[in-house]
Image (cartoon, rainbow, N blue to C red; front, side):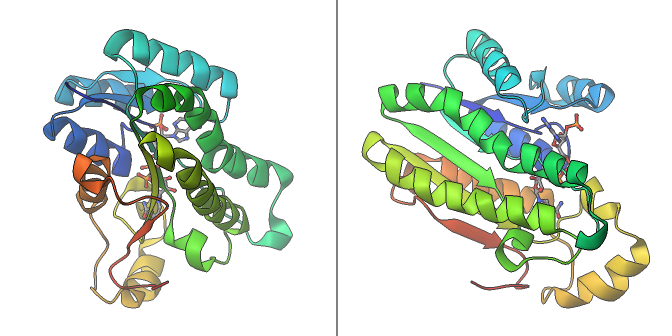
Length: 241
Ligand code: NDP
């Protein structure tokens, strides 16, 4: 039986590496994206992984998008909630829109995506939900009250849902990446990266998207069935909990 995996934000950055790693591990993979059509189509052409456009901050769009994926590939067994955005600002300058967009995508998006899939996982007595949170949800980060709140919320969601899914063969885990070399991080000015961020990482470099993808492949596997409600911190030694 070939299991089906759905990766949100699965066409760029960490998500793209996750989609490819799951495909290479033998899963049938669908990759969702928000609006960067050109990137998504190029990714689909290069990898053969079908891409699906919808906004994870809309419950209705998620329900419809998941129905399309399931009609094409079959029921989703593995859900990777990876889509995420930043709208950084110091709190005294943060707008309600910056707060709302980040909470809507990075936190409510997990409800919107997981809820329509959850009952099917319960019925089939198998599921893997893997949530990509962040080191900044664990430790907090100035200029990111919205992002830190959403990513910390993802960890609470993970732990609560792990307890609900356990008796039904569903595991729910989180990965907290540190700084990974994707467009999101490259948007940080190079001077800030080299002088302030990389010196805080004991291994002395940014992480690679593939290093997060390998954690996902492990958590998705049958071998990881006893691991639920956990958080894997993949941050080069920058922060321990
Ligand atoms: P990127 O900005 O490189 O890619 C983000 C992906 O998410 C894109 O595919 C994008 O689609 C998609 N996306 C964004 N908003 C939505 C939405 N509303 N609905 C559907 N898809 C959406 O991000 P990264 O690869 O850097 O980050 C991936 C995850 O890892 C995020 O959750 C991020 O918070 C987390 N993370 C990243 C770290 C890093 O260092 N990079 C560190 C810690 C955590 P499109 O291409 O269409 O825009």
